[in-house]
Image 1 (tube, rainbow, N blue to C red):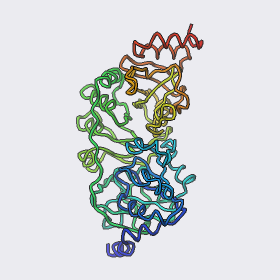
Image 2: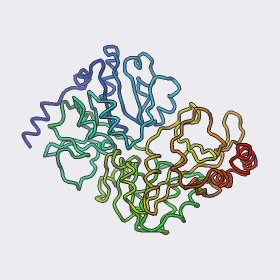
Image 3: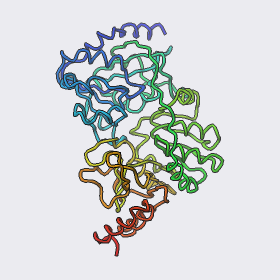
Length: 439
């Protein structure tokens, strides 16, 4: 213990000194959300006038940092997000930062071969008696990939960061740990970690969930996203099935509740845990919960090894051939690629696997006050396709489930029109006829 404590003290410096490590031209990878060292980031940003062409790569920004909002700062410190959170979504139109359409399964390659970080910064738990610091709820997502390739590692130690994978052996190179010998500089800053409330489902989301719940079999492996829809599905399973496991990008409140209610009785694997303090406490205390890197959790070949894998995700729009758009409508970016394609593709190769991509059949345009269909004849110009039609199994609206797996274009169009909002079925049918999709 005395040796690792000595190493710790040798590396411990002030926040200002740590910020001075950053030089012009540096690429910085930062752990996301509750793993993001905000105080260190602020100290680096305070030096913006001394810097040129510094880039920070992270995701889901916690607050409107100056490099997201101030043109003078953004000229010096560029920010690239791997996934948009609420602040990035709100600020995207200002043109001060970049969005990367990277699959989460490719994050390892992205960090090692594209970003090639000079510096990795992260927030961790305090060091233990063996010299290990835990990367916490969000730090495992891509932390180890960055640690292994960054020239310098700066860690912000925060007593509020809770450890994950406590039951796993403490070994050098572990995905959830960083040893003092791997750290170049340490700063200390204690601050509460971000919590977010569980999303409450809408009436339409409850209706969509009612179509999915009866299709989930005993002993299935679940993947669910964040939001009211997936919570509605998850809570709908209570008392109906058991013997489930979870292999999911994000461990949510609903996953915790299913485990407590005895619906999930097998291992729970996730890329990160994000939610309430109760969720963080449970994640830390539950031995069957394991946090692993997103490049592994989201890999289709890993997902397909499970039997009866069930993927449930939301989307923004779908065209009559089954192409889905989950990132943007036209050039209006509202989300990111993330893991939607990874899990849909993995489910298609799972024995007994199912994927459900869900959306309300329509929405009310806030500008015009008119109702518009989310099932489109074609996606709006410049809309990116998040998951191609050949990977789609089921599209679900409040009107039912359209099984598109390995179906022809005419059959896809017919089935999607059947679950469209009734106000738009005639128009969609006419458009499909004019295009030659149906007779």
